[in-house]
Image (tube, rainbow, N blue to C red; front, side, top):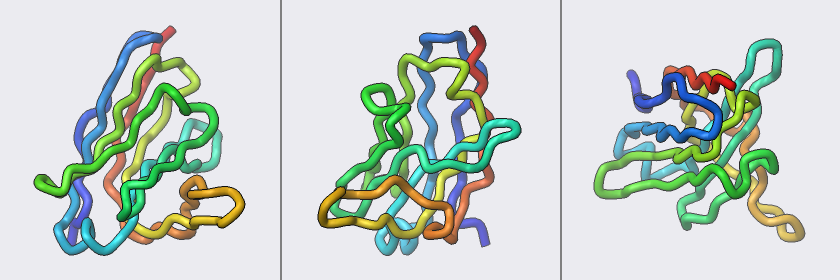
Length: 129
């Protein structure tokens, strides 16, 4: 049964913006941390941003200051606002539900694929120079 359904994405010029949306099953939304991952051609899947059930967030260094992860409990939805996009941001983006590791000395850790068991179908983001 599908629990995460993505929308958004597409093609944009360098410097442009896109917003990704992930509609999440209610039980999943309330139970798990949520995150966005991406995979570029020829590269491994990487965690982009995560948000836990206390609304704490984490980001991979390359997107800090440009991307914002958020969630809306009234809509059971997860969002990724992407600004100042560059060709290096091109890839397939996935939302996922699971767990974020919070380390005492480092704070909320960047999402790891191994910690996320429920996945959206993916959506392509292409940034042209």
